[in-house]
Image 1 (cartoon, one colour):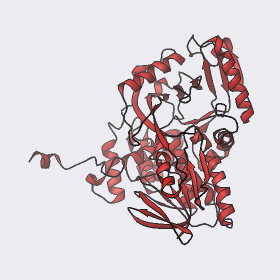
Image 2 (cartoon, one colour; image 1 turned 180 degrees about the vertical axis):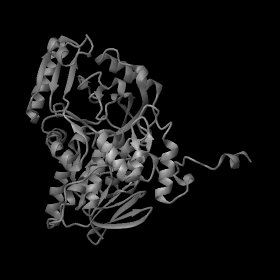
Image 3 (cartoon, one colour; image 1 turned 30 degrees about the vertical axis):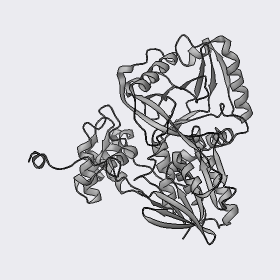
Image 4 (cartoon, one colour; image 1 turned 135 degrees about the vertical axis):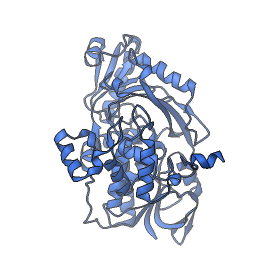
Length: 479
């Protein structure tokens, strides 16, 4: 039996696992997919928001601002990239200047520091490539960018190294109470725990509604994005927003932590929680609205497009806390934007609830430090030569676009909670994320996965399940 069972291995579930690993608790994380961050966490804007646009007094406002402050220390401890590049909210009509002032006042009420309304000249001085239609902007210097994959993997790997068990390919079918504990029925058998933490993303309502009479409803809100080549990465230096609407923060244009340019997302409410398709209409909207903010947006530099789902709760706030009619069942539901920014603070909030309930001792052996995968492309020539002499696999480039070596891919597979799929390697090393989009490196990545996992190449999948890449040999298929 477990003390704590966490459902969901996205950024929220993984950050909670890491926070609770500071205690002498028997913890397990179960995830229906084959890897860390396969749901909402894998497809978002990768922005650490300052916290000015959430309603004062809401959990979104409180936890966004608290979470934002934690990132400098976390990125150092867990070795994931994070930069405070600042953000701008553009106003295109001088008659709307009051809206920027209102956002500034709201942000200050939420506890955001350094907010300033810039006039047209001040705006153009710090961001010359915004369009001439921009009349003014709200500047938020504490906003930042991050890699959601590396961040979530940092939480999960550190939690695992501190004793948390992770079990994948495990889908929850039902939850019942038994002698004061919870029995969670899954396709991989039953799990028993004293405390359940529901961090199931767009499926969090279904998990809650298995247990509580206080039903909640999560709407999957789809957002489509375009990712541009690194050649376009310096077009802007800050994250560029437009004045927000009822559907969210709108289409943004932002540098990514790895030097690309990201444009998106759209916001369309769906019924299908598995719909990650991109559409011509959606991508055209992304480019059209992005071009309102930034002039000469180089559409010909788009290297890929993708879609993600946000877990939108009908009450428009996070649902965090113990269900009133289900003692020991704790929700972390409705975690849409600014969920990525808020995740560390959500974890602390959940930690406090669990500590009050179970009163555990501190884990005296807790180690807060996790070392990420070595990035060959970031080394000096001297360091590269030294590394290759000691480990020849670092001298073999697999992904030319991103300069990812065989050594890095092997590390990604062998490390705690290592990659088991092509997408798993991609998230951990960036092999396949460049201009050719796996055109050159796929074959070698498949070979390395097969060799390291001791399986046949035809058993290697893109993202687990039935997503096999190979069905047989050419000559066999001709027969």
